[in-house]
Length: 233
Figure 1 (cartoon, rainbow, N blue to C red):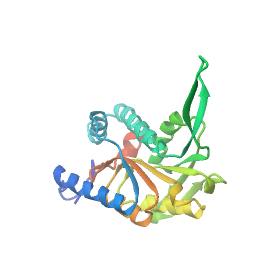
Figure 2 (figure 1 turned 45 degrees about the vertical axis):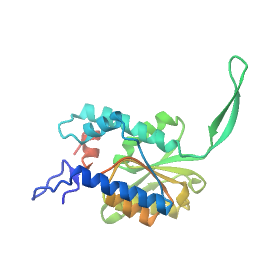
Figure 3 (figure 1 turned 120 degrees about the horizontal axis):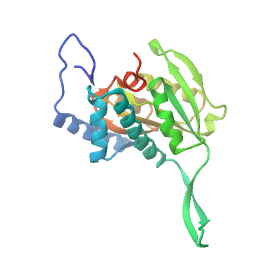
Figure 4 (figure 1 turned 135 degrees about the horizontal axis):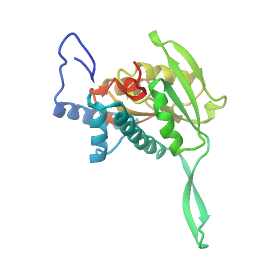
């Protein structure tokens, strides 16, 4: 079975029926909640569905792909930020009134999983202007080719950026790199646009205490994301 769109194969892909996949996804999410995994799926609004449709459409041109990918990445990242810890904070308004609000705790950072994860850096900085971002590059046979992490990353909450997840093997390797840097599981927030059911199972089975935020769980994930976004083969 071919588990992505825009891919090529010697045999015709077997496309699962939407109803079957939605039923399986619903059970998967229920199982994760029962196990205590913090998984967050964006609400299926018309806006979200249209953005996902455009990104999965093989006729979408480069300019439209980038524009709509940036929109969806911004929404997913903003949802991820909603799950970071905060404290109550009181300010005084220009008219002299006191307003009891909140302030996010300091000590957050991003780590992009190269190359496609770098596409999410702009959206993260649009939400958190001065946030520091590290990088991890994983090559063939899951070999870590490059890792640039903050010296104090073990004391920070990490937003791990990777837009499309298939088997989850690369993400698991990246999380392993973070854990070697002494980042606790509960301080890792995996932020993605599309994640396959298999990838979600593999990641959460190995790391059940991380937080996962995505816009869609689907076997029809756009594996062409990096090529379509950066415009290079």
